[in-house]
Image 1: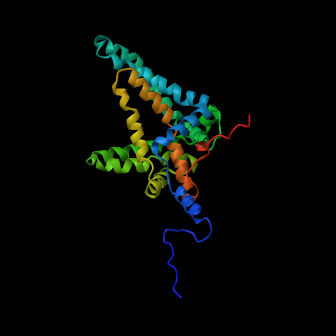
Image 2 (image 1 turned 30 degrees about the horizontal axis):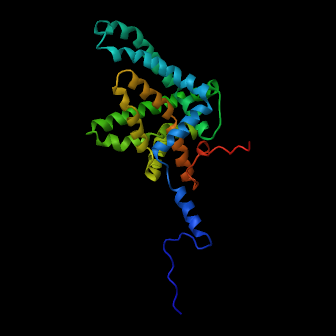
Image 3 (image 1 turned 45 degrees about the vertical axis):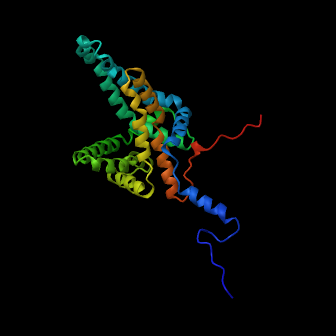
Length: 257
C-alpha cells in the first residue's frame, strides 16, 4: 500500500496543528523596536513619580546646564560666563543620573511586570549594588572606546551585544563579567537591540534644530528610555520557551460598564 507523504511544514501531528505552529512562531518572534514605544510609556505612567524624580530631575539639571550652547551664536560674549555657572548644574545632573541609574533599572524591570515601587525604595535597592554597576559602566565604556578605535566597524558589532548587561547585573544579581557574557549570549540567540539603537538615533535627529528640536529629542528619549528593559524581559521569555510579550504589553481588560 502506498503511504501518503507527510506535510513537512507541520510541526505537530495532532488536530489544530496550524494553531500550534502559529504559537511556535509567536514564541520565536521579537516585536519591532518601534513597538516598544507604547510599553515604555506605560512603564513610566505606571511609576510616574519615581521616573520624574530619578530620571527627570537629573535630566533637567543636565539640560539647563547645556542650554546656553543653543544660543551661543546669539550671546557669544557671555558664553563663557553662562556656561561656567550653569555647567556646574550639568555636572551635578550627570552625577545624580549615574547614582540613580541602578534604581531606574529596578523601576523599569518592575514596570515590565506591571509592578510599582517607590522612588526611594528603588534608589536604596539600586545603591546596594552601585559599585558593581559603576564597574560595569566603566568596563563597558572602555570596551566600546577600544572597539571604536579599531576602525569603527568593531564598535557596531560590540555595542548591541552589551546593551542588556546592566539588566542582567541587576535582575539576576550577576557579576560584571558574567553580565557582559549573558548579554552577549542573549544577542547571539535573539538579537533585538540593533533596532533600539536605531530608534534612539532617529528620535535624537530633531536635536539639530535649535531649542525646540532639542527639547523634543530629550522628551522622546525620556519616554523611550525603558525600551531596553522591555526587550530584556522579552528575551528572557523567549529563552524560557514562552511568548515574548511581557505583562506591560498586555491589552487592558475590557470594562463591563
